[in-house]
Image (cartoon, rainbow, N blue to C red; front, side, top):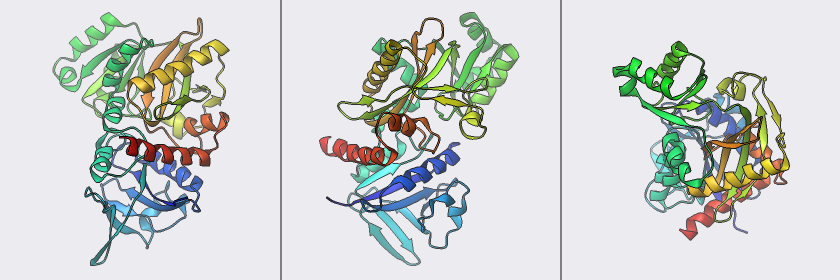
Length: 358
């Protein structure tokens, strides 16, 4: 069996830089060096690309990796066949790359931009391709496309940064005519709950909108769904499969950035506390949305399931979900019979399969 040269890409210039470092640490620690030649490449917050010169991946989350003396500057060439260009003093060498695992979250990581680079370079990569990545990253586009699946989703209203800054009172009036409080406010193009707020009144709504437009010029205001927060991991290309559903009890107002990565208030239930019928509907709905969005490789699909009637309501889709030690995506497939290391093997195989099928 051929031993793949795998570039694991992490970091990035998005607000989710730190999450990416923690995800990459887990991915790298679960990759079998007997199967893969690993090229760990970090993108700094300033946008510099660095080939990490150590296999001590515990250095990633605390940014110690930046000070490794064996680090070298690299670029990923868009010219087909060149792969990584590695700079060492005045010399430049190159490393052929068979497949890239872009463990990047958020802007410039899962929005189609870096995927476009790998398309130009003619290199297989893990995850959704350009159009699906861009559409799933933009929550407005996701909402519009999901409308055609017959999967119920939370009602929503779009607010733009220019609208808010020019006519804030009109924006607030429009939202209050459409929704009752509380409402959720989300930047259209962030993940990891960055910039997301729950507003219970007009003053809080204005503050939430002003915070959200710091991250994106488009913002969604969504109706509040009183239900369990349920997530499903989906894996595959032409015939994707869904994991068993998992449930998150945030132990807070909602599952925000701090409850995901900082505090320990949240509790995970795998499997989710659902009836068999509701759990199966969640799994089927996850695959329906995944295919409608044109996804390949992987995605995590999030839902609300109402407490009273177990109505399944689509929330959002994430094309490069967290891969940290506490992240739901690998935990859900582990509970479904696919251990973390095997999951990585499958993702890399699906990446190569999708590339050569295209």
